Image (cartoon, rainbow, N blue to C red; front, side, top):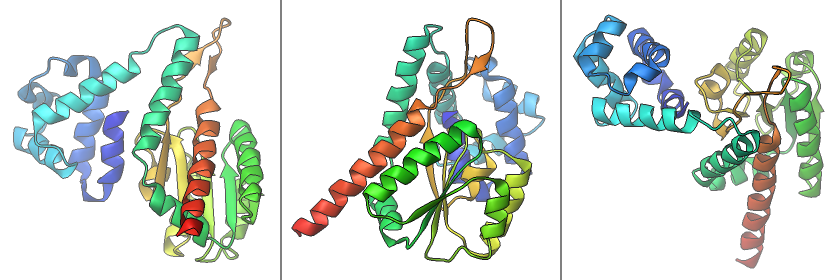
Length: 252
């Protein structure tokens, strides 16, 4: 959800009531198309001023601006049932996210890292990690794939402040992973989250966030599925941008 990107960005400034209002919005997205601020206040059992404060906390001018973001979310999530069109929308939206990325900062993080670790939270994410390691080798960057949460916990005492970790996750939510991230924060371990665009613990606590659009869909047999192609595209773009950046440095 596009609104979640703002929530992740300003999460530390939000209180419990703010998060309750955000959750209320999630639960009444269809009604939000025509909902007045007083209606939202009634649903959330809060005040109009609290809603205005929430909007300002996440960088918006007010309730009207907030509704615009919500309508944009509804528009982007109201996708076609054509499976090929869904894939095209995921790719195009992911490309838009990448256009907004601060590649200068990301390139510096990759360049300065003495060692890069890659961890994928599931089987498909581990496949992505394999491809990421191959591309990092082509950049002459030392890297290692972490195959399990146990590898993450065992590595905490080994990770240095000069190291960098990519964590690839579809949802960004995992109870065990949350505990590991807390330990990362206490030891100043740097990690970059690569997740779908939603309010999640992994992205909230990362020093750098990369968002991917992957819309869940159903196959002919009613089995739900998600495309990981946008994740591969993201890392392909990262490698290309890093290479361009290094060539510019050499020219200078």
